[in-house]
Amino acid sequence: METVKQAAILIGGKGTRLGDTVRNTPKPLLEVGGRPFVEHVMLNLRRFGFQDFILLAGYQSDVVHERYGADSDFAQELRASIRVLVEPSPMGTGGALKHAEAYLRDEFLLLNGDSIFDVNYLDLTNCVYDQEPSDWLGRVALLPVADASRYGLVELDRSKITAFREKPVVPESGLVNSGVYWLKSEILNYIEDTPCSLEQQVFPKLVAEGRLIGRVYNGFFIDIGIPEDLQRARDNLLDDLKKPAAFLDRDGTLNHDHGYTYKIEEFRWIEGAKGAIKQLNDAGYLVFVVTNQAGIARGYYDAAAVETLHQWMQGELAIVGAHIDDIRYCPHHPEGTVPELSIICECRKPRAGMLKSLIEKWKPEISRSFMLGDSDKDAQAGASVGILGKKIKPASILNEVKKILAL
Image (cartoon, rainbow, N blue to C red):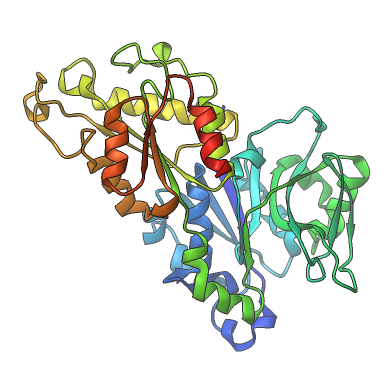
């Protein structure tokens, strides 16, 4: 399974509705919340495993190159690769894709750099649903809105998009195109001449062939294309993107605990654990794993074995459209055999060092966050940082998550 996910981000438009604001800066690079808006887009995608970013630039491309050229500071912060491709002349969304053909993977995400649709991208990219055609070439993330007059409507028959309608003259509720697409590279065969609009020239062909899928998501959405929304983003974006967190124990909570689990071949998911993580992802929660790993201090295995197992877990979760945002493990135990690790530390549960580290880095919404685990130590660690801490019964994580999400 391919583990590196690619996102192509359109940042070449002029943003004429913003007037002088974009005279010297491409719209997606306008400052919002202390950094260019497009960086919020990429940081959000990085949570879902995207590591290969292509910026499809045009207008004011020198500014893009200056900020995101080879070995840029932001690429290092992101821990990902960023490539800037500049269209030689305005080519439209389809033309910009065609220009990038040599660099695109077999499947890739395409989205706009001036909007954020904050959903579980792995559901769009990884999940396979029985009712959908197997010969699809594109999946479109659809957003339900009360008034589609600014966007136009999308008609959906079960999983297939059947039509894109013009903007309604009077306010009308319905589904709109969020501008987030998971595409197969074969779609480039439908782009013959440029300029070419993906939405106006390519998607209608796919609709006629029944090869364009629509998936409906409820999530925060903002497009900074007009002055009012740009100001709203500047005022509120950081708060709008803030999420509660689910802190989860590992052994005995996500997997059957047979004692010092560190080998992939010995790891057995508890039934419902992967589904519980996906439900949290879908509900907009950050998902963290915090686990005591005394086996490292006792010399049974090393940190590399734990990290290899955790990477494998992420691959397993991705198959079902789920992911863990971050993981902390404690390698210490006062009765260990590895001298430097045989200490009383602040990270071993019930102490809260691991949770505090995650809170410091991610700054979650504490009031709605919680900690679940199969021991009193897990509950105590959660309570010590001011969140709900609960000891749960073995194999009950899915039901517990459902209860919390229903509150």
